Length: 246
Image (cartoon, rainbow, N blue to C red; front, side):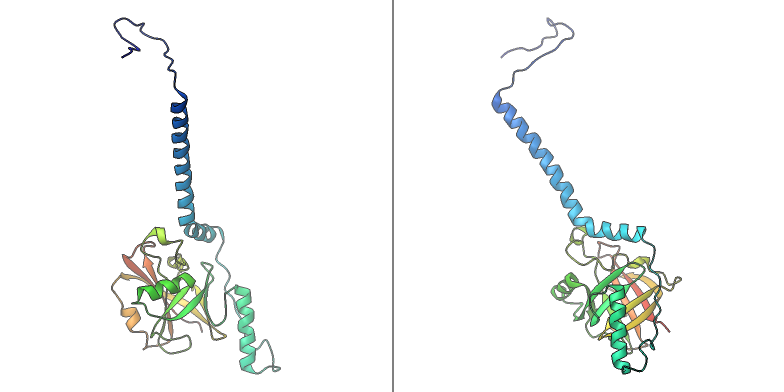
């Protein structure tokens, strides 16, 4: 054994130089490079995972709510029959809003949300609704359709974990920003017609409260939007109610 320093005989201060072999240098460099690579990979993974949510928040905060749109039913005069005229108006409005289609889709101006709606999805079948939520928003099976009496029930879960934000559509992530006092509007395009609703109430309910879903076949026309609350958990449900704008 070689003694490098002995307090009894060595000076109280000074410098020590160690000769390191080539193999040790290579190993040290590899370990440093591996550590740096893991840090970069971790940061990149977080950015990829949370980018949809960060993007939604930043876009909403930096852009003011979009203006409410008014439209009339007489713009095309008497040259077209009313059914054809309505279809044309709907297509023009869809182009203006940038919605995916006029067959079944949603547009919420305040939060800039626009998405395809997948019809007749079983909310009790996990594989069914997860497949639908990758495409857009789900319309609950057995709930009414726009224009019919009862409730049109739409849901877009915020998933059971923040790690799944990038996997499922985050259309309803900002749903809590809608305000009844501002009379925020929602546009639903269905079978080449557009239905406009105004927010009237919001509720945070227990996860097992299905009363909003089971009562959708009765009562007046209304729109029910639901997502998990808080986002990224399955603890509660946020329910937003809107009625046809008159």
